[in-house]
Amino acid sequence: MEKVKKTEDIFNRISGLIEQARKRVATTINEEMVLLYWNIGKTIREEIIKSKRAKYGEQIVQSLTAQLIPRYGRGFSKRNLWNMIKLYDEYPILQSLLGEFKGLSWTHIITLLPIKDNLKREFYATLCQKERWSTRTLQDRINSMLYERTALSKLPEETIKNQLKDLKEKDKMTPELVLRDPYVLDFLGLHDIYSEKDLEQVILNALEKFILEFGRDFYFVARQKRITIDSEDYYIDLLFYHRKLRCFVVIELKLGKFKAEYKGQMELYLR
Image (cartoon, rainbow, N blue to C red; front, side):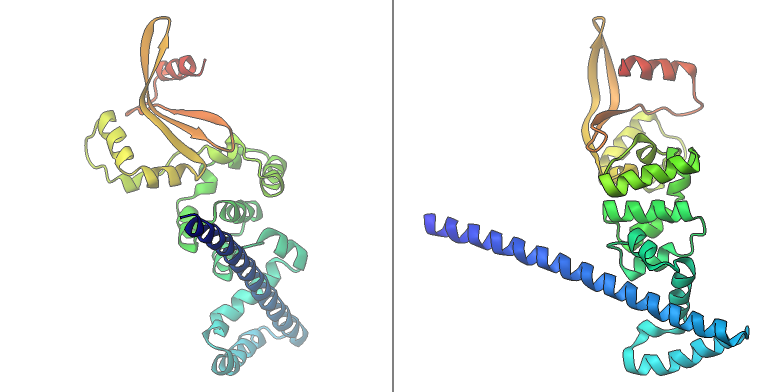
């Protein structure tokens, strides 16, 4: 029995080493690929600039594609070469590119490149790195206008920059990064007329997707959580805990227009 346990311990240690090495290799491959594509984009752009002919860019990309694909594969299609040129155009300084997209794959990067607002692009890149989004999840977040729905997007530009910097360098999460308005709950599949109880039940049935819409650091604590104030019982619809903010998050489900009494009810719970 002891021998089996010892073998299992050794296996787990070796398995951990293998997984760490795989992650390092994947990161290195991603960085090398991005560096290669940036250099290709730089080379083509410099040649286009030298020619001083508008149509020359289209001609040279078409010609290069015809030569590169047979030797190196579909990764050098016309569309991808233009993505490489765009990458260089957007990030002519290599260090700024590597700093913003560190750890992201090429497919992540070309999903982010069409975003024209630099702060918005940095927001998605940073959250993508921290929450390990797949390319599909990243595209879904962009399509759902996640950035515009965060409290962060309403803050002054300098404040946004500082909060994103703290998230990247210190892993510091703020309420402005976490809280959103409105939340997109289309995946719940509710139609026509439904009650607050129906809404609560369907959220619990689709809790994984609900938490992903809120953010990965939310943990479900309880439904209809009872608290007693001055000998009177009150019930919180949904109670979550946020790991990085280190605080509880109270969710009260209400249908219809906002009423002043809702604010008073929430302030009572928070006190």
